[in-house]
Amino acid sequence: MTDIKICSNLFEQDKMRVIDSLKNGKIYIYVFLRLLCIAAKANVNGELKIFDNEFYTPEIMSNFFSLPLNLITESLEILQKYGLITVADNKYCVANFDEYALENKKERN
Image (tube, rainbow, N blue to C red; front, top):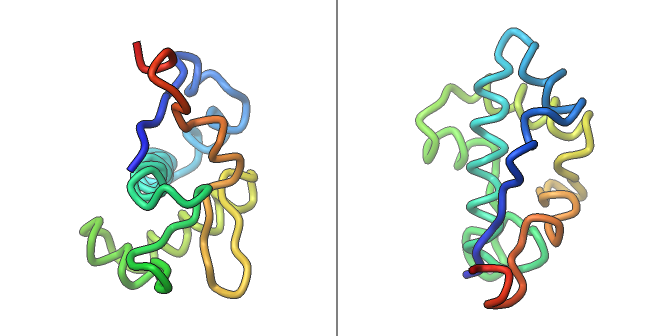
């Protein structure tokens, strides 16, 4: 497990402002923040793994986040469109996870 950092200007970034302005933007941002936490827990370069060789699926996310599957799939599409996550072979990953990960104790203080 690793800690993550959220910059105070996260919601001022253009892509986050655009996402927030969408119909379900607040849900999309909530999903993104949950994915950041999952990636930090897995601590594998942003990969969204539930176990060693098993990745989170939209169905698992729907269950764990208590959100309808259609909102999860919409969220994943939007987050991918704006470059916040990547997907390859049905494996989701937080893009540029190293920007959010705290790498040493000095950063944590």
